[in-house]
Image (cartoon, rainbow, N blue to C red; front, side, top):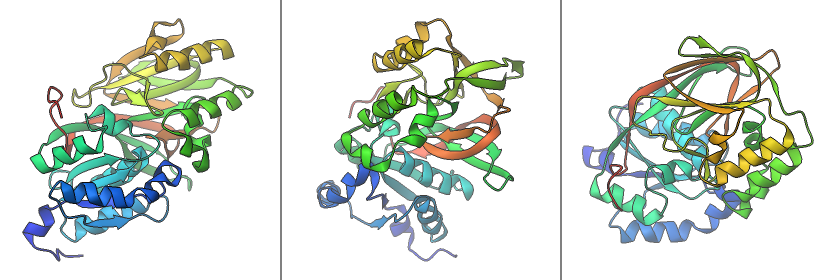
Length: 319
């Protein structure tokens, strides 16, 4: 599709809204969102997703029509989809990405100082831009072929990230963290660990683990601090290895994330900076990317420094 809009229109934000985010709460807040956008002096130019993955399709269509500024309105999954639409078209140098966090998990927004809608809108109207790293993942798709996807928050495999995949949409109406904690309680009855083959920047670290997670930002799972201080623009990823922990230790580690990341002080949980990770398991294992299904192991995970032009303030700014 060729460009079909004027340069002036191309630079204005297009709001890609997921009305089902937050367990459907966003649908009831669309009027409030429109009012906030218009009070900020912006045009409430919106398109709405209707199914999983639709945010990526809408992002592609908008970019092909000439749009240069996309704002994901929803949870981390909505940001994930729009970011993948940008990266799939290699449009990251031309297109800016923003977000207004409205879903269950708003961790990308919070990590970038945009946890409140007012702060996100101020970043948009002020023209703030922060170059943010993104993670690139090459994994196995459902059809067995290579699948390339990108993440802003985290890539993970094992027991802990499967909580995200197991959390039903209706439960997400309870808030940011509570749905995931409830599912954690149910999953404690199942097997806890599995063997992984793991390479961190070429160094082998094979073993039996509860989970392996790779972080670009410090939060996941709705306010849980997985990688304290992880910076989205340092050109590095943080690998967190959860050893073959028992149920009591897992509960302590989960609680440690709620307390700001004290799980990293536990025996059996450690952290390594990395630029490239190779991960596989003999057991069929799903890969979680920002709370979304990102294919299956084996996978290669690598950092793409400064790839995304995010409408966010510098870390020292106060919105």
